[in-house]
Length: 205
Image 1 (cartoon, rainbow, N blue to C red):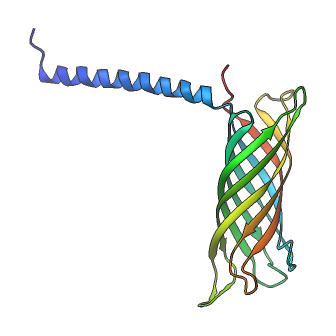
Image 2 (image 1 turned 90 degrees about the vertical axis):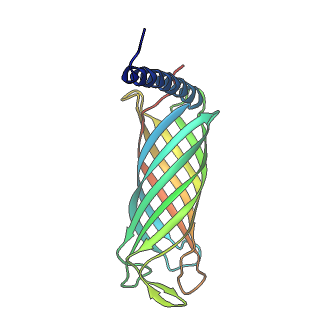
Image 3 (image 1 turned 30 degrees about the horizontal axis):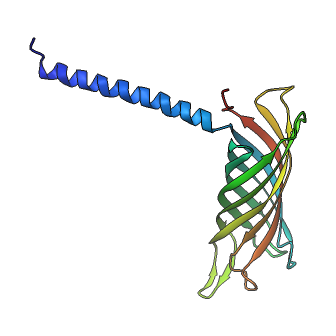
């Protein structure tokens, strides 16, 4: 029986579509087996800047964190944070800072308890804007540097209210940045946090 070229193309396309669909379902099943939990946290973050070498000032802001746990409490987290200060170090200059960091997080959940404790080490980039940064070429209004977070926190289970919700009761992170400041060129900051976590992809067992 003769089959037209058009029908051959449609037949081949249907075969490719069926194979891609089956492969996609298989990959989704494999990911589901690997990922233990996937959640998004929205966190309020007050920050104390330069906590070691003086000239302290405060900043206010928030962060969004995407966390995936995949093996015995071990997971990875991506953290995007934005902070603002109207007056930096008692001067008339303000500061807006945006950080993007990524790294491992370990979460310990005691049996028959409604809380978990986590620790994390994240690295990425910090961008300072709308401020004054002294450099060898003069004053500039923006700068960027490495951002390093080391810290942890406590989460409280709210499954009795909503099985998808968890409370970020407390978080504390040491944040190190290296933006020009006419002294050491290093900033040591303490970022605190509290907020809500939404778990939208629990592991299927």
